[in-house]
Length: 192
Image 1 (tube, rainbow, N blue to C red):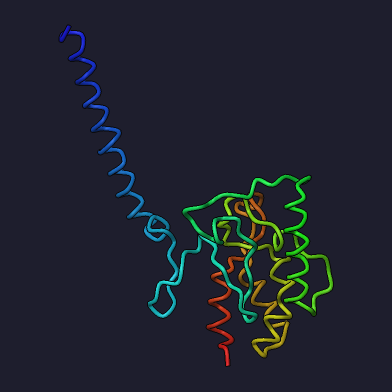
Image 2 (cartoon, rainbow, N blue to C red; image 1 turned 120 degrees about the vertical axis):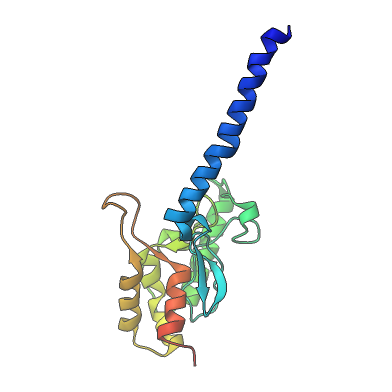
């Protein structure tokens, strides 16, 4: 019997070492060399202080900052509770939540009179989306400009500068990273 089990056991040991130790070690080493920033979580620092990751959204609620899209992850942007609400288009709970979010958006942005961009009132599938659409950023530009005491055109220019376009010209949608543009606001237009 051992003569039948021994080759399988030896193969298991070889494959465990190869696929469980050597392969992950080589890939981790290559990523640390070639993509160090991304391999370590795309962490963002401001004045040598860790302020977040450009890959995970976080809550901004003060009027001098751009606000992110709503989060359905736990109590908001909790990576341990990542996930959408799973509410469908016929759900009354989703309808009520969006209606409340639209009213709140207009209350926070009284100078804005257009339609509210969908991403500003709906959560992403993960609940951790760090980006908003350029339309969502432009809809908040007047509020940010007023509370920062700068011309709205300067804020719109900042939005244009921080808009990331489609990857390879066709993948994804244009987007604005909320953490990065808010840090740029603090650098270029410090709060008084």
